[in-house]
Image 1 (cartoon, rainbow, N blue to C red):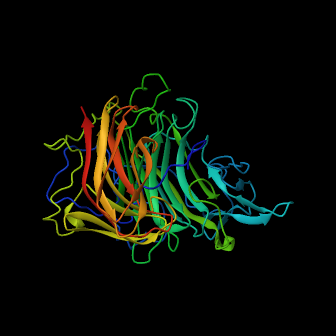
Image 2: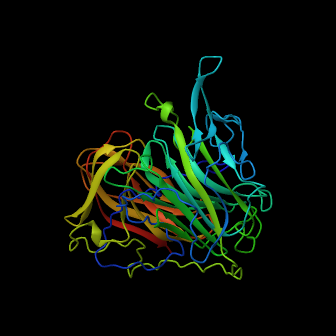
Image 3: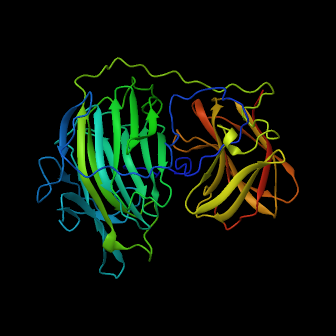
Length: 474
């Protein structure tokens, strides 16, 4: 959820459709993190609740099966906040049992729409936290939950440090997001970690298919937190592994690894309404069904943890012999996009389209441009961006009809800042060469990402791209 923040952009996160375009070329470097989703053919949900099971290698530290008549206040506290407390959200978090209650062995966090004195819509909702009651350092958190569907609804299961000021206010203090789902796209769940200054984040997603969603049944979300690594799972499907992070005060040296995640954290859950990421509710949002249900929360811990961990060294991709950091492969020999592990074609927020290799070009066709610039997107990650160096981006492109395409080099693990700013480029029906140059002024990053964004604005003309290059200007 993130306190006191500008909401992360989800564009690189939700890999609802991951495609590739390289024919037989391997990446010249490896990453210490994995932000790729698990298989997207998940169709099963966890079994009905029983007593908390014993997990191999773990002891049960604490749990709540929500079988009492009211919220257990030896575990949880209500967390009231006024509207706009964070992320420009609309709801007031209250202590009312209309917003937080137990029903049929499940916790319910309910969003309610009413009218303010001036006649405008007013929203209340529920948020609870275990801060000061069930704080812990290292372990495995397992939560079974069912999310609501509806534009502007934003349920989350997340963790913050007991003492947020120890390493400094967010994001320096760190944040662990076990699950977030947007009510307008309940087929995709996000797992994220935030840290550092400047803000760093790493995110993985899992997308359901065949009509399955996180709103029509309960699903099990978990994170395994160890001194030098986090691992996220949904219904046992691996979503994300992270073992490289940092924290620092601007202008000072980084704190010793594994800070900030070497302190106690607590679990919290909430149902937000509106905000910078999901957008506000509209006439389609059914508040009679705006309920975030939680079947259980279980926290496990190992008998001991090895805290003698070292931050992994970063690996940087080496350029090809011609100096190109983009791995295009031999498009002439490629039969389809599944031959590649470097290029990725992504769809979000209503974007509908496809990508293929044809006549030695990447061909992107769109049926619906979606609601965001990144709703239809072609990207290549893991580009080395070294502070003080200059880079040139170039490619050839044309379209079936005149239209725009937005080009940038982004930082998905460094707060989505831009090394090459978002640049709207008119694309014509004639094949042309487009060139951009920029200087890298931020700290070294082994995960720069070239983006071609073709969403929003109602433009769906097919685009053809070839001869893509990112090279250092000597």
